[in-house]
Length: 128
Image (cartoon, rainbow, N blue to C red; front, side):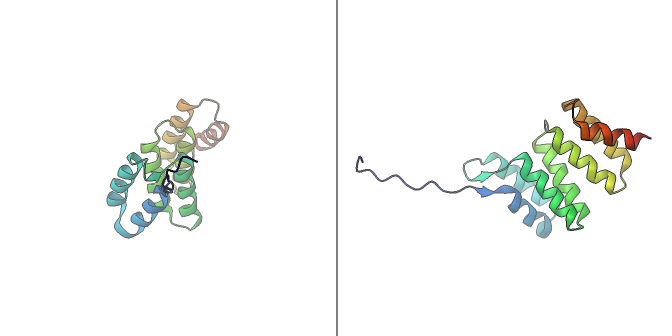
């Protein structure tokens, strides 16, 4: 030991959880603005593609379709190279009856990853 006391590392806050609460209480615009700030503040907040993907499905499973769509839309904005987020966004759009938008999102998923089998299969089904 060198006699110096090192401060404990502060745990990062989960940006997706703060975003979810803000989305419900303050609306999409305020929540999105806060999410953008938190995504940039990597010292205090953590945010991953999976966090946003999981949040979208949590809202969907709770029958909160608009919150699910808003979360996934925010996710693809922050992580524009995530074929998985585009796939998930497309899936929820399709389940919400927004077929044309779902087709576009599946195509974007496939542009990012032509081997995404989920997107390939779903796109074939929707285009029938």
